[in-house]
Every structure is written in structure tokens, then in C-alpha cells.
Image: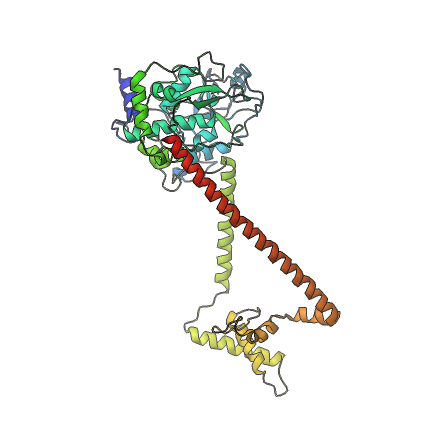
Length: 493
């Protein structure tokens, strides 16, 4: 075996490596991120220059600059080399990925600097021929795919001579889950085992895309796959670099979309070996064969599919469930705005706070000041405030503002003795409301109150009916989930 084959064998079968050190890392010599200049970019006559972040990125930490490598720009020469190819897709949206999204993609999905990223132009589509580049969907990254592209995904595309982006989402989920599951459980799973249980089929309506279908008489190895993926076909980019394919390179994998002449339904002549390995995979617990479990961060790192992804404790905790990098960017902006508002609120609170050594003395001084103010403005005939007004003033002073404080006894009960809340309800009548009700008269006040009380009753009745209906739906969903779980167990058996 050559040195390259030995390195690839170690990567595939989990042979001990030296982590991210340069001694045991076959990609340690790959150059860092480069940005193609505006005047010399393109496959022919490429001129590259390193990112200079002193002027434009002065406020960014050096660590953040290293993780969030800037994107590249493509000149007119490179754009002229791309062409439509076979034009396979009828519904073929253009990419909605913007140049400013690329830094966030690198951060969210751990894309190393050695992988160059190209944002598609306004006229380029996912099935176009862009020499030297391969299209990748964001949904692939969200499902857990990292570079290099997983071995089984590469082998299936190599066998059928198609591009990775031609596979439907559940196809790449099955392939990545199989690789993760087989490595962690010590079961060999090659292309023969994949084609023993599955076969490729072209999508009925979306020609050019391919599904991975379970063969008749075979049990599905990977379970609980999704059936409703939406809004992912316009989120794609083009990538290239040594780390995209790993030491073996792309092989026969097509970098662009094309029709395949392979027989989809023909399995490889693997015989009893594939059958035995498939049985070992099916013997694994159903819960572990759930694609969501197989593609969790913990299991992906244990299977070495994330060997070249830097571990980020602040971010890489669990699967990423962000709809898109653009929405993640908006979420980060919203969090920053909330943080700014919270800091401003704290500054206002601190500005109004007075430091007092004796808290009890502070309470007394506030109460005395409030009583004096009430006595001046609303005094009785003797010049002293009435007990009721003094009590209210003391309650207002305890809050330190102009709000109305309603005293409620802690040992009272509205159900046993409703009369004790009479004084409290009178205190709730604000002066402006009392003035307005006095102007409209008792009859109109009663009519106004009756109408709003009826509206409140109707709102409460509607809310109660909605809660009852929701509880019934929850019961029905629980029963349906139990039935589906039993069906899955029977299929797995």
C-alpha cells in the first residue's frame, strides 16, 4: 500500500491518529485560507494573496478572525468558464446565499480555511458546470456533513457517476448514518452493503435528483427519516480544496450534474458477506439506528467523521437547528440588541439608586417624606392626613414611585369571605377613571361595564374551548405516536 492509501485506510476505519497535530494529520500541510484577488482570480493564472485584516477588521479578535475566514471574490474570467451543462432541472432556483453569509457558515459548520468557498453568481444554478468546483447544499452541513466528504457518500456518487448534490436529503442522511453507525459498532460497511439493502432511483418529478430506496424484502437499517424538507434547494455554494475529498481525491465522482447510465437496481455481487454485515447492523438497537441519533455531534465525533472539525464548546453543542445562516445572523443581531438594551436599563437603574448604610432608616425617611407630602396636598380639617390616606401614602412610599399599592391580607380568601376585598377594589379605581365615569353618569357607566364584562366572558369561554380541544389533540397525537412506534418495531423485527 502506498502512503496515500495507508492514510485513507486510517481515516476510514478509525485507526488511531494524533488528533489535530501535524505529525498524525495527513492534512497538516494544506495551506491556510486565501482570498483570490479581484484581478487575478480563476482557475487559469490564479493569483492569491493573504487576508489583511488590520484595517477592515480592527475590532475583531485574532481568534475570531482565524475562525471566520473571509470569503473570496471571483472575477469575470472564472464566470465565463461556468456554463449550464445538461440543464437537467425544470425548477432550478438560483442560490440565495450572500457573500456575507460565508463567514457565518465557516463559523457555524466548522469549515476549515483550506476549503475555498465560491458564492454562485446570479445566473449560475446548482446543476451548472463550474470547472474545479463542486456544489454543496447548506442542508448537508446542517445534517452533520463535514469535510472531507464521508466515504460512503463519495463511493455511491463514484459508483453511479453523479455529483453529491444530486442526492436527495434522506439519501445523504442514510449514507452518513450508516458510516457513523458502522464505525462506532465495529461493523464493516462498504458500498456492497449499501446496495444490498438500498438502490438508487431517480426522482419522479424532480428529474436529475436521486433517492435511496429500501429494496423489497429488506429492512431499513436507518430509521425515523424526515419526509418534509422545504426551502433548502436555493441554499447552496461551490467548494474546492484538497480537504473536500480527502487523500483519495474525487475519483470518478462528477463535480457537476449529469445523467447516469448505471443500472440503479443492480446490487453488487457481495453474497453472504454483505448479508452477514447487514444482519449485524440490524441487530443494533432501533434507537441507535435513528438518523437523528446517528448524526448527533457526540456520535459523529466518535465515528471520526468530524476528525478535522475544531471542537467549539461555545457553539458545537448538539445538532444545529438553525433554518439558515441568514436567519442565524439575524438572531445574533437580535441578541446583541437585547444585550445593549439590558445594559442601558441597568445604567438607568444604577443612576436612580442611592446608597444608604441603614436600610431601616431609609424606609422610615421615605415613609415620613411621603406622609408629609400627602399632609400638605390632601390634608383634613385638622391639618393631619386621615388614617386611610396615610396608609395609602405609606404603601406608595414603600414602592418608591407614583403607582397605586393595594394592600391584600395574606390570610384572606376570596372564596370564603369576598367582602374583605371591597376596600381593595375601591383603591383600584384610578382618579382619571372615576372622573370619566362621573361625567357619563351611572346608567351609561353600568352599560359600559356590562358590555365589557360580557366581552371578557366571551373571551374566557373561547379560550376554555380552545384549551379543551388542544388537550384532545394531544391525547390523539399520543395514541398515534404509540401506534407508529409499534409499527416501526414490527418493521425493524
